Image (tube, rainbow, N blue to C red):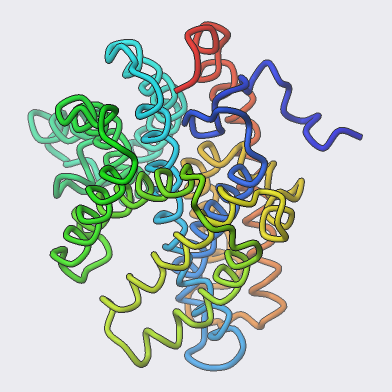
Length: 378
């Protein structure tokens, strides 16, 4: 049976990835990398919500600490976005209006549906609402700011927790064409572009504060994605098959060790290095052991619905833990390891089911329309 029978080709145009980024051709390995990123983010949010039922010691604590590094999944999303969007724009000049329209079409249909769900639930459950009680003007301004994807780049609390990252995505969509056009980067040699992107990435990451949520760090990761694209397009780029898988397998346990022995600043750079090596391996040798593992059908499916999953999984997780709170009698009744893993599997299955519904009813039909396919990738 076709591994992707669940995802009809008419919903996923050739030339676009599951998050709407441009590809010269569909890349199974990059689809799988997005699947890994989505699962890492899910693990981070699960362990955060499960904290009241997690003991301070034992196997459950170890599993929770490993899941806690899942925030690196967002950095992987940013790295992939920088790689794909920069690569699309540097190859071909595109009319800014049509380019931006395609980008907004990728973000907004799914975002608006989930945003409406969040807003409705906050109206029904005012104790959990982030919307200011005084609707005019504070509440209205807050909703408009969130609809404009300002939280993240600006210090505004997001209505949807994960939506802060979309603020950086939109900023990158707007920023890359401006930088490429203003500096006329297409006329530069590849070596000159590599030097520029390399120096820019290093300067941003070195000057950025050590807090992971600082905007400057996220822009540095996006810039690093463009650097990886330039390096991997060079015929002289050495192939390092399998190295990316080693880095991916090592990043979680070594990150926990680094957090104990080193400062957060060192950990951030270590994580970014591992993710860069992974992307480099996938880009230069997609048929390597790394590419074959990450291109597995399960991870590819996960990557194809990663945007819908990313937006909706917070709602399903909160629903699961509200239900668990009532069943368990509140915090303090610590979960055993089997119970912890079972609850995570149930929450994951419900999140995937919700993401599939969202993908097949909203993201596929409205963000991957035939019209958007006709105008070309990116």
